[in-house]
Amino acid sequence: MKKARYLVPGDYMADPAVHVFNGKLFIYPSHDWESGIEENDNGDHFNMKDYHVFSMEDIEGEVVDHGVVLDTKDIPWAGRQLWDCDVACKDGKYYMYFPLKDKNDIFRIGVAISDKPEGPFIPQPDPIKGSYSMDPAILEENGEYYMYFGGLWGGQLQRYRNNKALECAILPEGDELALCGKIAKLRDDMLEFAEEPRDVVILDENGKPLTAGDTERRFFEASWVHKYNGKYYFSYSTGDTHLLCYAIGDNPYGPFTYQGVILTPVVGWTTHHAIAEFKGKWYLFHHDSVPSGGRTWLRSLKVIELEYNPDGTIKTIEGQQK
Ligand code: FUB
Image (cartoon, rainbow, N blue to C red; front, top):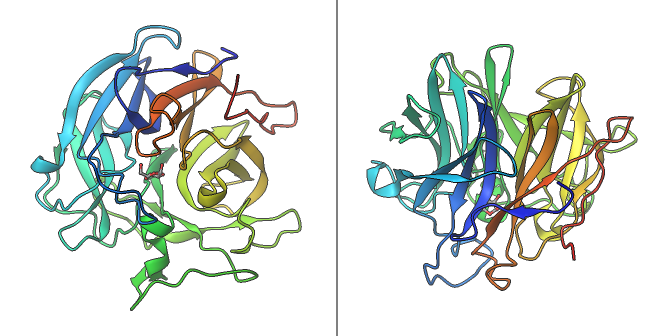
């Protein structure tokens, strides 16, 4: 598959999380719609209210829509905006982790449970204690589960330091250290953090943490982690510079050393992805706003093959292909 394929041409889906469960590929996207809310830097126009799940037996084959699997009206603590989710499987149960603003308009991360990868998912009555910000992504490693999360601007990460809410948001600038994404191990029951979230530090080629002014490389949102040849690949979006980048580390906590660009800017402000191996090949799932004529809040899911160089680096993919 050398050319990207649109996966759900009949609807707007974004922010894919992708896993292979029971030999099938499952996609857990955000569900964009035209809510009429004006575009702003807080991302109010991303006013999503439910999730669908999709599955595929084959990467070129039919994409099956399993319908609505979780809706804000069924989440007791819901305010607004169901953003990027992820799903993990443990002991035959499927746990969906989703960011949602609570009734005070603060992003929290909730959990919903199902017996099947295709849902429906039943939400827990409250969000994860101590959770904040958005874009959860789960890594399973030797029976332990780690959540990566966080995002700037509308994702509210700048409102926190050391896992505590600030009086007011502070966004570092210039030579100040960049804000980091977060990682926390999950408790055995998968319903709470087992530890205080820690920073996911990204280093430059000299072993120095990236600075806030390094906007083409520093973390903004959309964490994803996959393993390749025993190494941990932390990939993410640079937000206002619209790149998907990656950094490599030796363990789930990092630090990770910056390597390069996976995807150059697509049409639409946001860029967000998942990377998965399926039937012996690697794929990049992401979104763009081409089918909606560039409306950045109406995004469409795509997949394209992802290739590695012999040294383990990833070959850069052009976001806007002819
Ligand atoms: O879909 C809303 C937000 O846009 C996501 O949470 C971000 O990663 C960006 O894709």
